[in-house]
Length: 373
Image (tube, rainbow, N blue to C red):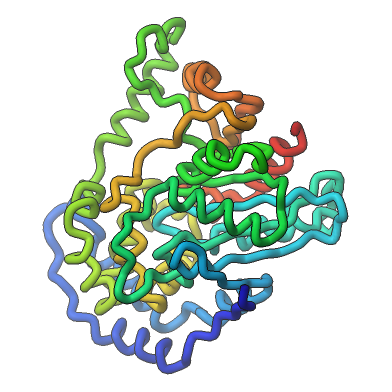
């Protein structure tokens, strides 16, 4: 394992600003967000990125944490590894979202590792391991690429190996979005060492199994219908990424505005991100856009789609399960049939990217669930 520190060359930052200022802008189409990211909105955001956004502050924030890289199964894995001063602390591996990064966890690492410093009970403290998913940011794919597909199972095996190399034979696991796919798979694969699997959401989605909706009231059925409409709608980015990710990747690595527009559209689609509603601060959105741009990983981060790995979390009974931002009670009942469900939280986040928008709810959830175990 090699210590790692982020140090983006100034020439790369200067190049980013120059490209932003020389953007060849498309003309506006009729309509608003339903046609894509509006030109006026993106121009203002790109100007802020070029003239006011401070990448060095983001870099310093990440460099405040111990970081390392290691090679596992032919893949460079970058990860934060922050040990708690509390001797009884439980190791926990945190897996980030798509299209996001380990930036999700910058506000949760401190309270989890050093609860005394935040006025929290030190009885529940954690050693935090937060890897960058393969193909994301500082875990770039090799060139030439490994032709073996990256599946959620392969990522879970990689995480199990990482935790073993760190000497952790008993640890917890948490994830959101893409991380919520990895976390229960890791539990099923390495149940001998994983003590619990906590995800933000995704369990209890009806599958059509006979009797699973028995007892559901009108409010619960309406909630499920709304969820189904959300997951089945959208811009169609998923099918395109599953078929032609290489085509999009040229724009991502040649035009920072193309990369920014794509990420902003995802946040808008997931959360209703607009000038009137920004559940994730613009500096955090731009920090993620910068991370993707500066590492050239906008295309490679889409592997969950073209490898067929995107979907819903698996059900597993190898270890206890918790859900922090659970949905309707009917979903809890469905999830409890398929998992050893120990906790179903009712936390609320204004964004699908929970760690970015509501880190305090994530800290509370992790401390609560693993405290039960």
